[in-house]
Length: 350
Ligand SMILES: C[S@@+](CC[C@H](N)C(=O)[O-])C[C@H]1O[C@@H](n2cnc3c(N)ncnc32)[C@H](O)[C@@H]1O
Image (tube, rainbow, N blue to C red):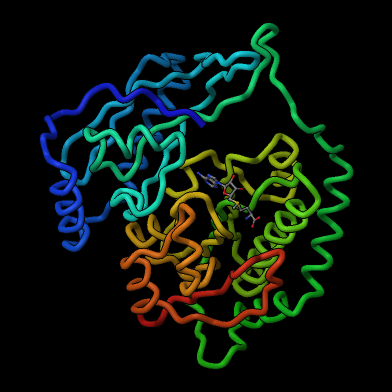
């Protein structure tokens, strides 16, 4: 990923680093949401208009938690040259800065880095970056480092892992949870959506494919449990920038709509089940700011120490949300395929 170009801040920022961190801490403690659907929707609107018009020179505006707006100039189509290879910048997307990153406790990724480290952008919970393809510097052809496996191989593997998932204890337990057969757990009514993040591509190596296929199988099962229960149509969305054409085609066949970042975030609401298995973005912090979904299937809260090394750390807001609004329901997920995944069901009444 490459950053978009930071061009302008609406008001100067003469604060020292210590003052900036102190202010961030105060703003965070006051409860001001760092991530809002309004800001995400605004970015989507700008991305869409830029992609449709083809005016990659246009700017996208992101407002910081201090109220100052920062403009990013898009670089779609720009070529960044290295010695023998180069990169061509593709569609824009958002980079998300969890509070720990803004406070300097965890390292930003290379695309977020200029924004997080640039003092003028130090109050931004999001910045703008680009997906990129590596290309041959002379021919400009996209370089494929690994051969794309045949579609049939991916489909056959998916069926195999789907079968294994359905035979697992975790599948049975999850079914009981969604059927309301687990003591003291009452599922919220009216759930009509499953929104999945970061389940990975089926096109990579065998172990990645096993995890990705099993995690997508879980999503299909949850949809099935909900449909069997309510008989209503349950929509499924999935977002992962790693998806290749083969993933998109297969997921579409399975009735899962793939959305490009950040569009799936806009689908999360109180009637959704959110599935996020070790995302490289702070899904939990974003959710904690925007809504209280009916069910969360993501990593256990106590996974904190290792998560501090990733981009989805447990923040005080995530901790509070889980404690106040959710009950954790044990589910024996296979740790190789699902890592430390658990299930949180929203408490009633809400
Ligand atoms: C650590 S991997 C986890 C993959 C898989 N869930 C697993 O357990 O092996 C992180 C995943 O986050 C995905 N990711 C990165 N940015 C994302 C975004 N903006 N939205 C959704 N997923 C994203 C990556 O493409 C990658 O698949």
